Image (cartoon, rainbow, N blue to C red; front, side, top):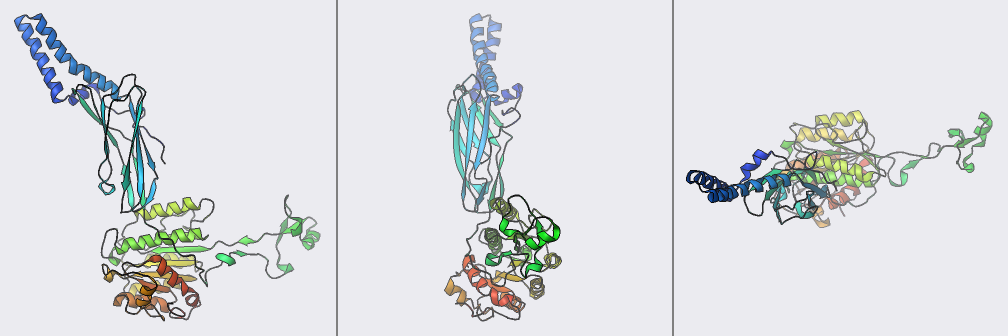
Length: 471
């Protein structure tokens, strides 16, 4: 939730007194014109009573303008957005608060907050008289099916006096940002056989695994357990030495997102590209929850976020914050103009073969499929989801039976996808990838469960498919 922010240095709307006269309504202008006309006639005809009436008619709109001009400087506004980050399709609440810090009551207040059209219609509110020192709060909801970063504001305020002589419209300068992140799907917690050290039961490795001679001791520190004292090293160095604690090895995972414009055909919230972005977001969230240091890589060779030079974000007590950084990056990722996956391949080649690789590919021709195969050689275990772009709009579901019907069994892509995606999946499987084709309507959780079921066989190398097929 964001803190309340005023419109300007003093939290008030701006404008000059002379500019306020431009807010005179038709009634106010008529009163002013009638008053001036009456004053002229009284001067010509020598009628002092008519002069007093004319002055009264002319003074009323002038007094209204002056009072309203003073009042607008003493009206402050603030906005609170809760939450600031929402998933696509979810709602956020915006609360507006108006404070009258003057000694005079306000007239009618009409509020309008500017929001992008994808979040819904512009909210409008009418507030009746606000007493001196009083406040009013209103709220509205915003929702978007499209991920992105959207500004809320500035707030527009229109004031009018009780006589309807003047209306002033001014805009506050403060605005807030609503981040709509991709939808994420919970993934089943399966054990990835053949994965890099540091996952699950094999996460902690001792520095000493062979024998007493391989133990690397250190000096005793206050609070160390005396049962860890290494007496042989103590006698050798002449001071109390203890065995080192087991050091955890941080498991790493790279999530590769193919953003090439030519790799996807349709657009919109249900397009194949949005499915790939949502899948990458789900994989990032899942791997961070499982204790991995995650790097989010695109086909341009850029890491979308990272707190280190290698682009990895490590989990910890701030795991939710690090996942939020990834989600913010995915909220605004767009198509690239890259012709191939060469830059991503160069980054993976320079990074070495440590850790898992999870890739979300669009359309892969033969050249790009062979390049993706070479990416697998630089990674310990690799899982690929290849989108069947040619099947967009064909419908379908990815339950257990649907996946078996897709033909991804016994190491072949089968007839579940188009010829291009079937050939790409076959090449990836032959190179050691756990690759599955993705059709419109497929569930990522079901694809993840069945893909990771064959990782153990694929990671061993030399196999061309999933052991045992789909079951």
